[in-house]
Amino acid sequence: MDQNRIYNFNAGPSALPLGVLEEIQRSFLNFSGSGMSILEVSHRSKWFDDVINDAVIRTQRLLGLDDTYHVLFVQGGASMQFCMIPMNFLNSNASADYVNTGTWSTKAIKEVRNQGKQASVVASSEDRNFSYIPKDIPFNSDAAYCHITSNNTIKGTQWSSFPEIGGVPLIADMSSDIMSRPFDPAPFGMIYAGAQKNVGPAGVCLVIVREDMLERVPDNLPAMLKYTTFVEKKSMYNTPPCFTIYTIQLVLKWLEEEIGGLENMEKMNQKKAGLLYQTIDDSDFYQGTADRDSRSLMNVPFRLPNPDLEQRFIKKSLENSLGGLKGHKSVGGCRASIYNATSLYAVQALVDFIKVFEKKNG
Ligand SMILES: Cc1ncc(COP(=O)(O)O)c(C=O)c1O
Image (cartoon, rainbow, N blue to C red):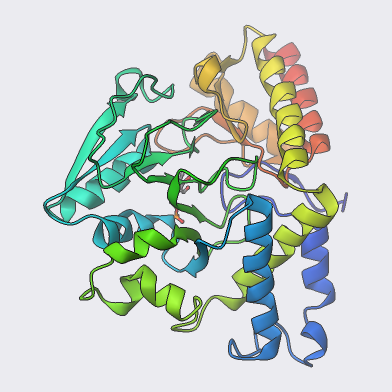
């Protein structure tokens, strides 16, 4: 590893594959023989066309999407999707099901209600501080759609499999676990993910929408808030964030060509998370905060015996080249985000540090 680089456990923006960063560096001044950097080429040029088309095709291939799914790049982050979803897919006489598993689901529900529309919270884990994924959920068979958050970045919980809800389209915020494992896309009417965790830098939301969902989009929405605009104009109604999309293309290429696809990625993620959870479980000093059967493979929150020790842990970890281990400001404690690009070496270095810190302070 470069002497000046640290092991990065940030929750997002977060670690990118080193090979991707090096590729960007290599081609920075003269992108694809254009004589310009990617920051300078026109989004209407053949150079950028190749980039965005390749990013779309790789997304389809990695996720096993058939041609009923459109792959879009939308600005405004995942938070913009919280409001675009009800605007596009929920009319005022209908109701949508939402499962509330934490901060991000709560925000998504709020955006529905802000529009004077109905969100039915069919299950919530708020009673135990969002430490688990609810089971046996009474979904409504007449819901317009059902929205879940597949991985809860702050509380470190994750749906290990997706709920069976018959014909109701499932919509998932996969911001913090997209491309971390394979899944069957068929029940999904829509999937979205802020790029800045598993697929690239901040600046764009990857949106995957099924053709039949587009029939619901009202004509009178502003152009930039309609999924149909993004479909018709292939995500280029206006100037897209070219650099972000280029980086995503490289990350997807890395996933396909270096990692070998999502089955392999999942195995690696299981290995990394297994190592870290085992270390926490073997100790009485550290305490995981999520229920075991709901644990996330991507975000691992944990507590130490008191806040002073947590502060010391975070300070000392940084001195040992381990960054980003502070828990989200709303919950405190510590959190290691171990997304796709965080290597097993990085997790091993963290585990070694965790053990040494306990010996000295336990
Ligand atoms: C699961 C989840 N959803 C949504 C968001 C919000 O994403 P953005 O900042 O792209 O709006 C985040 C951000 O961390 C997240 O983790």
